[in-house]
Amino acid sequence: MPWPDTLAAKLISGFIARRFDMDAITIRRFDPPMGAMPFFNNSATPDMRKFELQQFAGPLLKFLTDLAVPLEDGAKDDEALDELVTEMSTENSPSSKMVAAIDKYYRFQDEG
Amino acid sequence: MSSIFWRSMGIASRGIVILMIAIPIVAYAQPMDSQEDEFVAAVTDDGKETECKFDDTVVNEPAACIVELFLEGDKNALRTIAAEYASKNIDFLDISYLDPDNTSDKGGFSVTYKWNAESSDQEVDLENGRYLMRRKSYGLDIDGKYAFNDTLNNNDLSTISAKFSLERGDFGKLRPIVNAEAFMSCLVDLQKLVPQPTDSNDVDGWALYDENYSPRGKACWTDYGIDEIAKSYDATYVYAMDFHANLEGNQDYSDKNLVFGLSAALAMQTSSKNKKRNIFDFPFRLMRESFSNDSSYVAPWPSVKIDIDSVDASNNEMREALTSELKFTRATGEVAFQTILANFKGDPVRFNVSYRYFYEFSAPNEIKAANMDSFDYVAMSLRFPARLIPIIDTDDYEFYFTYTTGQLPFDLQSEKAFEVGISTNISQLARLFGE
Image 1 (cartoon, rainbow over the protein chains, first blue to last red):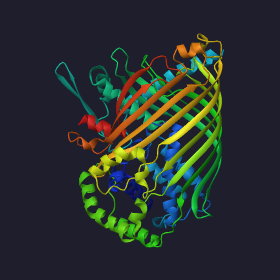
Image 2 (tube, rainbow over the protein chains, first blue to last red):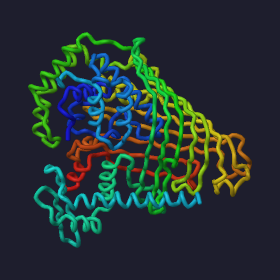
Image 3 (tube, one colour):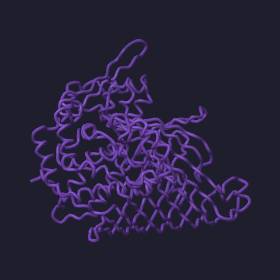
């Protein structure tokens, strides 16, 4: 299954593509596992990997904040960051879970 | 009593893995939920070709076919399928097949398990114009790797760990984007005009989508100046300290240490402006830029973690046999690094590495003589999309070559092992084997 056809998916895949010289459509089409994403250090210990994932997740959420994407009612940035890093830490989890984690906390323009 | 408990954990792990291997067999022997999934494989048995076909119309024969595949077919491939299927469906387990480089060692399944419970008090602070993270957490982690069939396991230690940690991250200065609303409207309008195909395997549909969406989508990003903003890396960092109590052991906890200690970690990202200052990435950057002169990728600095621990090895038979000094102080360090070596039309070739070092302070002579006062261990991985290999007509997954060498404190042998594998969605892989 590809990533969902939503604005959240376009923004996240576009951000990843621009950071790592990748093709956003390829990411959305094939939904690669987290372990195949360019921010995932497969050799590091889980503790170390978590720090490195925060180094990508933090700037991604800052990008959404710069775009003034609002949080859902009652949602908090810190919970979004925590859930995003947790999802990103599972090597065999599909990368589309990043979209689900972010969509849960932020309200995008195409959500009405 | 305690040794019975730890040995029973090993037996329980074996039971879990047997279940994990059985689940995919049963799963393939039942109609799949998705009408789009299909498993096709051919087996040659003394010149007789048998075809196992698994789709929405054929559901009666697959069990026998799967058994035959296991008996006569490419067993390693099937083991990989089984391991990937189980790993995908169970979050706390990851199963893989280990293939040591020494022919006298056995290959076999290994299971990596991980479970954790955590309570945290975290905040993201936007008030001073920077995106900052502060976090206090209390947690319990259980993780390790168990290898079956006497397979050489020179991967991670098994640990049970309780800890209190403090983390802080600075992810850069907030820069509100004035064209943000118009940019996102541009993407939403395009989304309505050019809908994305719903099936990853719709090759023609995605080609048409790429043709219609790509130029207009890129225009949305560039016309509003978002392309440059997204490509620009700020200097960011995360640092952390923790106080921990660990129980660490060999894979079945028959030898174990009780550890109390303090650790500190630092991960840093270079900014785009200063990317040439990252000397660790120098050779990789040269290689990367020789393949692509417009690369916006900026490699992070190597991440560093240091632990100072007080170790009680009263239940470590291996140490007890050598010395009566069972309490000691140990330093552990890890340096990890990841980068992109090259990029072929949006397909990155990735390299990542982790080096770990263990050192015992003031080790007794018996320990030094047995070469147990220091250990080091390296794991490295080279990864690239399978479609870079022209003979494989698929875009579905990434190939990887992993090499590990060295010794962790509880390993009895110092050996090298290669691990070659694929990272994929199981239904895509099953179809590939079928084809």
